Length: 69
Length: 382
Image 1 (cartoon, each protein chain N blue to C red):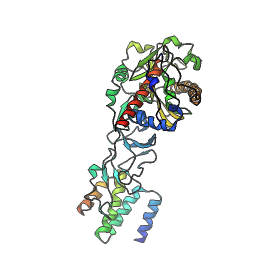
Image 2: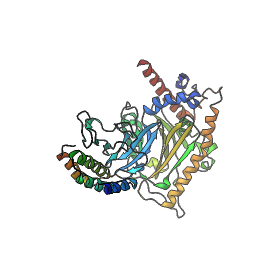
Image 3: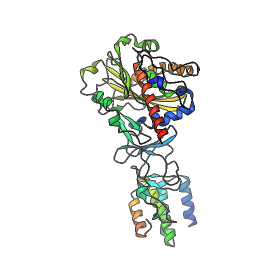
Image 4: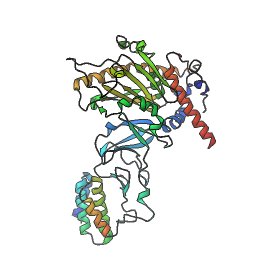
């Protein structure tokens, strides 16, 4: 996770919104429990929503299936 | 601070102008903000400021943070630029909203129509809903707005009658110009920062009396007797000309005319203030708007915009036109700044109006005085 964490920090530093969507999704996929997964998915979803990214509906659906939205 | 405005509301022949405090006193400036500028339909921008869907521009109007936005369907709207969560400013510089407006603080998100569409972690980590946080009730505050002749007007208090009702006579007067106006673009807008109270810019604009003295260049073709007063008490005022002459380029080219205008506009032009703060001018081939942004009791920013009948008009002629108008408006600066300075003279009683020439200016004073009186009566009753 630390390597992913580093990439996330770099993406934040560069304000790479598109990159953040993918990286937070990746973090969610690697998460060990519901809360951690939904936490990262939420971030991915919000950045996708802001960007009008096509991944937003899918991320929303994943959160909905988890009962988190 | 309560000023005596009763003398303003006398007939023009015996009236005095607004007392000095309406030009130099901070407290009266704030009273006018509430009574005149917030309670009526004030101009804040032009639609050309947000030309494409998703364009958003933060605007501060007399301290009120606003967000001008063209939503995803192309409608121009004005919201308070304040997140419904903790009151954070949402957008701090002009930008394109690709999907949603995300608050930079806790990332609550709003659609371009103002709906609250995401509340991340509002119910705890990774939990994005909470039973006490109904998103449908927490959208952005939308400020009533209206678009006319390319200008965006707002009613900040939310208490005014509809724009079409308040300005029905003016809309009827200029209905021939109620068609698409095309902003000339970057070379057709400029700003003038003027050390004057905003009302003095209105007052000077409304009357033609000063033209031969302040704009001698106009004398050759636009004499004082070629002008007429426009004074509709309680509604609007300004001036008109009978000898508007089209600008021509090196090879005699002119701007295209607005479609289907009546003969009156062959050589006619009218220059009217949409009370309180928008100065409009219409002629057969172009129009302009000056939006007065009161920055302080003695400081005003004039936002000038030029509009044409077609999206692309001759670039050189457009530049020439902008330069010509800028010259005229700059010629007015020493006057409005001089009148501002004059109002620190304690003996000045608001001045007198020429019954023949100053009717449009008195019409504006009378309207302001009525707005203030009505506001004071309302405050006293509450």
